[in-house]
Length: 305
Image (cartoon, rainbow, N blue to C red):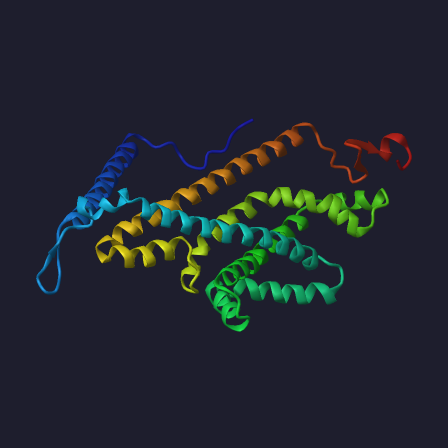
């Protein structure tokens, strides 16, 4: 069996050119990093002529040894995680509801759901937070949670709908063949497969949800950004603004990297299960359906089981 080659193997001249370009690129990146370090480290001259140390000076980082700083950062981080956790649960519930209504057979249910879903998908999250806060007079916490839950729930619902639509028709036909109602077929057969198939996408969207909690800074919710940059900035002064910004950035980055790692692990395990199921030869005949963890076929028995 011959393999098609999309392009010719590079010759000596092409390889030499590639190496030169790679070396030049590395040199440019290192020069850019060195320039950035120099600009951040050099002293600053204010408008009145006063000189202040650069942001990389040790005097700007001495607050990192203050336990009060880390307690405040910890409280802000817990507030961020709390809002993200509650919003994530509600977003998944709303997404499941949207997916079922979006795939309903009745146009009287499907069309209005589609309009509402597209409206929430197109609405900026910050405007939704402000709307909920000002119109419904909720607290800042519930304004953040409700806006994130509705917006991300609409995206999750569309992902689940796509997952259900991608399933073979034989899955639904098999459920109906063993006497399940259309609703029970959707719940027991189609939805679990679609949810498992779209789980990496859902988890990735929840990572985005965690990042969007920083918008609570605008509506007065004391999460990580507001706790770090506003409250601590007022307490320590403008001298440590860059330091506090760097601390908040590192905490957000560490949290998001942890969640992204979880997403990759789930994606890898989900893909491994799919490969194992394919190697085991999962029946593709619509006449075959699962019962008690076994596959039975009316083609074999000569009758409907």
